[in-house]
Length: 342
Image 1: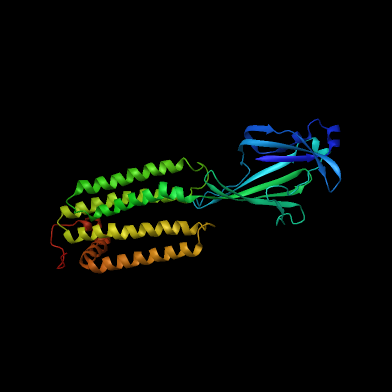
Image 2: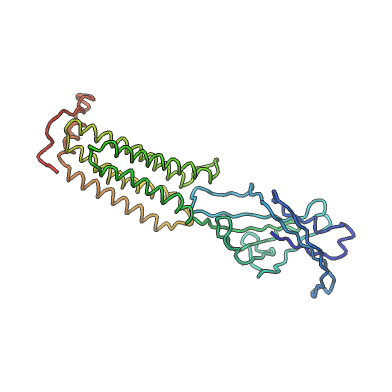
């Protein structure tokens, strides 16, 4: 960042280096490079002026800025740069914001409509953000507040984390497509998906602040890991039903865990993104995604209830007998499933 200070020669009567009393308050670590001074002729005031530039190379603290990470990676940041006259020089000098150089132009600031405000063209893409125009306003005689808004470039995060996690999640669900006798491959695939999702989640945690509410991406990985655990429960249920000879109910459990739980997984992910009301995510598109996945859940479970109606009837009878016979009502003996075979 380059800060250019212009002052009249009379300022040297009060301070040996007037350019040093003007500083960026939130400059944290790095170096400040002082450029040489240049004598200028001001056509408007018809007086001589002295111009001095200061280049900041390093990091700027944003501890006073509020960054909402709840929609990460579909979010943006606004960074601030307060420029002020250091005390006690503010009792002698006053700042005056000038929209000069680099395509700067005067604008009207909504927060300070009666104060001088300037803006400069977009800065381009740096450190994972696409930066918008650079804006400055002078609310006080001794203070200039500058800000710059950056939209996070989410494509790289999607390809590096979200897309692999989707593949791993689908692996976990597709394991139910294997024959129930292939117990080891089914469990191995689900465990591989679970471990891979956990590793990706740990990598994501290093990219976001450890304090505050979890971001959408953190919640997404937590939901994905939870569903992989439910897949392990589904495999166990299928093996148990197979051991009892309940072939019909075992096939029903397979299809429920594959298509039913997959549709619920998509619904939960879409709903959690929609309720966050992210500015960079279209509310119409997220709402349509929730509606589509909701319809998919109803259609999938409706079809499975009809296709495996005998298995569902038997399960419903067992559940109805719970108040009367207790947990023993769920004991499934080895007997044939209804007349329907698949």
